[in-house]
Image 1 (spheres, rainbow, N blue to C red):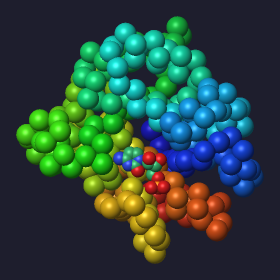
Image 2 (image 1 turned 180 degrees about the horizontal axis):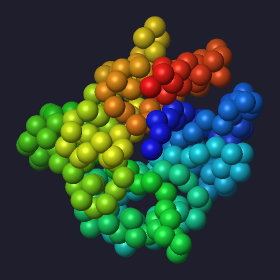
Image 3 (image 1 turned 180 degrees about the vertical axis):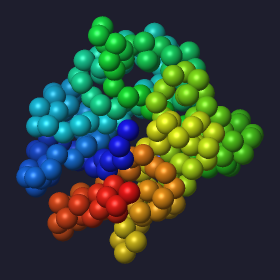
Image 4 (image 1 turned 45 degrees about the vertical axis):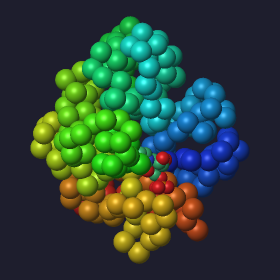
Length: 234
Ligand code: C5P
């Protein structure tokens, strides 16, 4: 599995998304479609971006009873996304059902990755609201191991956790990491960040980059810089 840069297309609608993608004439970046865009535009936005030649990470974070997730995953699989995800908090039976639903009659399926603990949840929130008392790092690793047991391909995690996840779950288990910023860039609301180069060193397989590219004066150059720092000169 090669390393790649995924652009988080956090736009409110199709028009803004397409005019952003129109900037790219020579390359077809991997694109992340999240809930906002998907709920606004429906499955057609996935088909349209796919038909322009982009790979797609459909970031919808499913979490429901196994049967419902299985059936929903089968619909997402037919959209031909390249990566889809769910919450590991739905537990192993839900994750196993997700794989079943995703698998097409010919045996192929999109990659399936899990969100472990949301990065918006800290130790205190986890203990107070979720009644989980073990250290958050252990919880993240335990959820990652559950995802592996269920047959998933990897997890979304902070680049700071990528090394530990690989140590515990194997180097083939994918780490998809948001929270990436250029060394000389704005952090915005992200607190624990890494540069593309640091994310590469620590072993991230994919970095998910939003505003450092989407809000850049020259998004194509910002994308190329990410690729140079994260993918090239490996
Ligand atoms: O603009 P920025 O680079 O911060 O965008 C990062 C993307 O990754 C956003 O789509 C955000 O929702 C997503 N993400 C994140 N942290 C997580 C999980 C997802 O930033 N833990």
